[in-house]
Image (cartoon, rainbow, N blue to C red):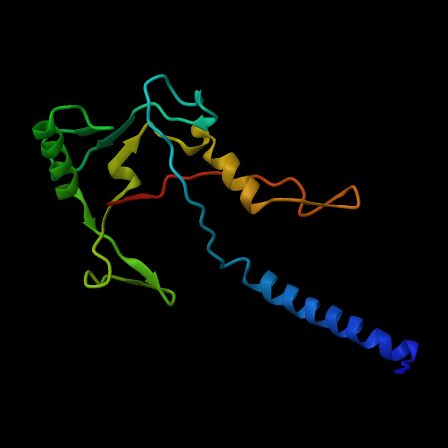
Length: 173
């Protein structure tokens, strides 16, 4: 028979509490620099944003407009593409020719290494779009994933009501 004192029985709980506090400090310390990602797709159909088809949020056709000095005429592309492949390919090539090489972040520096990642970009002053993630329920979905509350003992325990907003940053191609 193994007998332990009350003090010995509390040591694992104290150790767990101390470990949880350390873990919490580490997680909270990295929260400001952490990257979160969610994935999914939104069907594009005629009828407008916010319409529902089988419980899935949808988007109306997306129009992308590009206005850069490298293109004589405004480039306007609609997704999904229309049936005219030659017209679509011409507009897409004009858009691609308007782009600049895109850098990526590595250890706090902007790096251009096309051997690692070949990508192009347009800054927000060079394009516009009629697509907004809020119209399709994307922001609501992301908010539910990132700011989910827990229910314990009938009480909502969590970080409480939070909101996110979307900003147009650049177009990566």
